[in-house]
Length: 169
Length: 121
Image 1 (tube, one colour):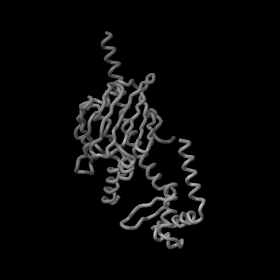
Image 2 (spheres, helix red, strand yellow):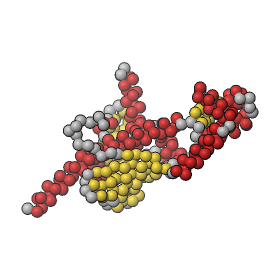
Image 3 (cartoon, each protein chain N blue to C red):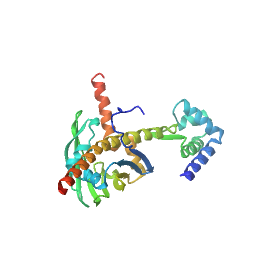
Image 4 (cartoon, rainbow over the protein chains, first blue to last red):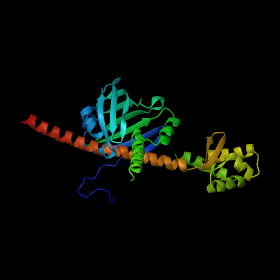
């Protein structure tokens, strides 16, 4: 494959598929023990460094995560092209340190998915499997139709296109 | 999964076994049309055309959408393309996040190693 320069280490591949009428599954392997991947996923200062990818032009405004069963989280993002910040929030339904996280996605109202992430150690690596289970097929279809992937890229990609047009790009 | 595909094929073949329905697909290949327009073109009653379109819709060959009081028909499969594109955008978002997470994990590993060395001294 031509992508990336030769000196760059080869990244592990992220896969995504619709595993049922109402479920999306994302899988990725990390070169490190489960406890460290989990730590990066549950420590707000560390989350800040990877959850909002730079290439998407978004940045964290704040990140609160009370990672325990029944605790809640609230991530607020800003985007250069948008005055309104975007908030993502919900509750942790299940927390098993080093192994499993389950949280709700409440920003979209009732159609929000419940996300389950499992961390499974295999040798020196950790396999992370993330499942978004929607309340119904219609709810997942609605997200697909809205075009907003993960609540982010769709909106911002559209916004970027719009900005490029406005700027005569 | 195999069984699921088999059923879908069967439904699609059954849908294509009728000359009128094949004609409807050909017609929709030239452009979207309402059920009324299709009924006209094929000299059928509205109810008869609705039945044919229903069979094609269940087979995934045609999609319909109600626009005001009119039910618009178009060739199926476009939705699947939209879905595939959405899944790819979703995958790319997570791939971008996870590539950044790699760096955090590397750093934590280095830190742990350094701390371990310090403790052993």
